[in-house]
Length: 192
Image 1: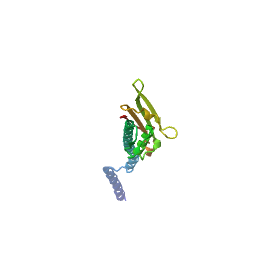
Image 2: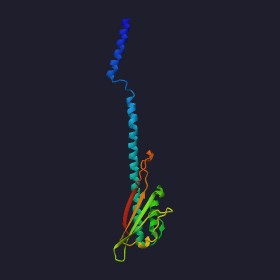
Image 3: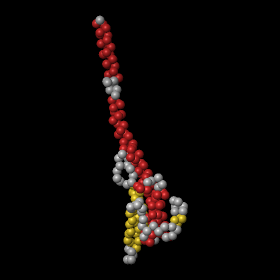
């Protein structure tokens, strides 16, 4: 009997030594716990990177639309008549440069919600003393319109026109984390 007891004891002792030598010490689940802790952090970093990338893309699109709209308004000032829209290819005749800016931007950004876009148009024009004066319109106002009908009379050749377009972008929408910082693009063109 002593022999069996000693063989059993020797076998257990040898098994313990083998587990120690192989590094198995009852830590089989530790890698799973580490993975469970790091996965949410990794996903947050990936989501943040994706959201930032989409924000940069959106800012570029808003900037391109703003540039096209302000150049269109500058050309309109030169002709002050019917001109061809670069986005739709149609003949346009309007007396409201603010509405034309909205039209140009919304045509250039068809997948953007118009309710998330805000505009500021500043028209520089000479006063009676010959110095530059400004007229600024902000919008959209009540009724979701952006209008400055007197603006067409103020457009003067060789004076700048500045258009600012802001887009209310949802940062990290997957995590339900929204910052109130819109993407804004400001462009200036000379009225020709």
